[in-house]
Length: 386
Image (cartoon, rainbow, N blue to C red):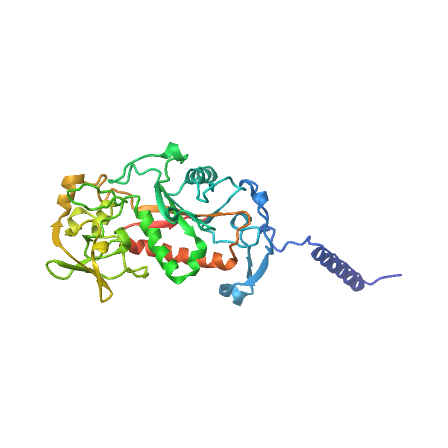
């Protein structure tokens, strides 16, 4: 039978269309060969076989900026190393550490083992951040474990507590300190959410502050915080209890109760000098109320404020330098650009939900915005991504 040329071409086109449909049904079709499936587990990272991700389908979504041209972009699911086995996935700033799968990081008292966390982090990253901030998915038994700072290498912090514990903790030399933070589930409470933004900056500040124990000036108490009787003008986030006493009369001083506004308090000019972020000539005099070491305990609550009476002793930065020496290196040679790695230590069967993960992301956004304010925009803190 003789087939016309037109009929022949129609048969060829139908055959090709059928083969194309077959490949699409059997999963052989790839829209863009350069896009790799997002649920592949990176075998270069330790123990990723313990992590499985549910519902990590690649889906398409229209890109508003290119809608007029009819183009679209692929919406890729988070990689497995940022997700729990339940399918809860975290922001790309999170370095996820799984208890048991990545090592043993929790002791018999249900507290995190700082040395093991730092050692695991040092082995797992090519470039260490300046600060490692670790949140948890459980409530530690010890109240001390809620939030604290561990100095790893403060040899270049300028003054105060100068030490180098790189070998003790297994750091490769850049990590300056470990900050341990509480269970991220507490962030669901608005008051706790804001209080922990304070706490983030406060614990980071312990890299430099406040280890001034000389009895002559009585600047710090025994816990490494500014004496609550200190008068800094606009207050200081390193003051014990976050109180901020201001002079009302010759012998009367008052502090409003601490609130949870993250933009109420920041580091004083005095602290910025100690941190190497402000020159000596820009630091105003500070002082102390001579009412013992705890003006909060010794004060009286009246009209919502804490009032305390006592003689006021003012001193300048020069008086401070006579006792402790000048900062070295001085401003402007001190380091002003820092990196922060946020980690989350979880159990294999972590109860965290996607709502917890979304709240945590919002918290990190707020904290990342708050830190520059806390240092009066004199330094930068870059949150690393994974």
